[in-house]
Length: 324
Image (cartoon, rainbow, N blue to C red):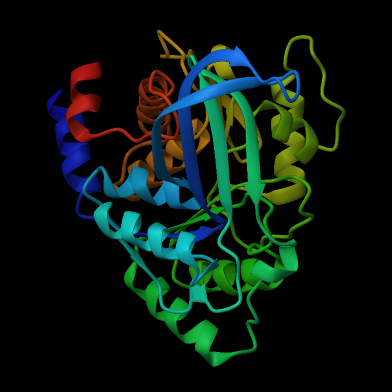
C-alpha cells in the first residue's frame, strides 16, 4: 500500500497531453411503460438526462481525476454542444489547448437512449472525418500544440477514427516526442494505416490486435506470441498491452510476451470507456517511473473499477487505494 501511495503521489506531479477525437456523450434514461400506437417501438418516460466527456476527453478526465495536470488538443465546434463540452472540461480540470475549438465544426455528440439499464439505441451527430482534421501547415495550429508538447511529460494519442489523427498529426507529434524522449502512447484504430517513427506504448483490444497484426479475428484461444510479434514488426512499440476482456491483459516488450495479467473486474455493468482508463493509467504510471508490470497491474485494477460503473467513468486515487 505504501508503494502504491508513493506511485500515485508521483503521478499527481505529472503533466500529460491528450491528443485525439473528442466526443460529448449524452445519456437519456427512463422507463418503458407501453408500446407506441404509431409504430412497434417502446415509449420511454424520461427520468434522467446527463452529459459526459467521451473518447479522448474521457482519457483526459481519467488523468485529471488522479490529480494529474492534463491538457487536451482536439477538434470541436463553437456550437451549443461545444460550449457544454468546454464547461465539462473546466469542471474536470482539463485545459484545452488553443486552436481546438473552431467555428464551422460540428461537435461530435453521441446520444444513448437507456431503459431499465439496457441501451435501446444510439444517435450519432457528427461530420465526415475531413471536417475534424487540422492543417499542420498553419502556425496557428502548430504553435499552440508545440507549446503544449514542450510542457508535458507524456502524450497520449486517443484515436477513435473521427479524423483528427492522421499521418501529418502523427509525424508532428511523434518526431517532437522522439527528439525529447517523451513517452508517447497510442490507443489505436486499425483502419488507420499510420506509421510511427517513435512509439512507447500501444493499447489495442482483442479485435484491434488481430487487425493490427494483419490477421482475421479468431474465436479460439488468442495466439498471443504470434500477434505480439506481428504488431511489433509493423509498428515497433516499446511496450504493447492487449486488453482481452474477461481474459485480462497481455504485456509485451519489443514483440516478446512477458506477462499475462488476469482480469480484476468482479462485476461488469458497462465496458464503454474502459480502454480510455487503461491507456490513461498505463501512460501515467510509466511516466511516474513505474515498471511495465506495475503499470499494467494498476491499469488492470482501474479498468475493473470503471466497468462496474454505468457509462463512461473515471477512478480516483481513493478508489484505487481501497481496491488493493
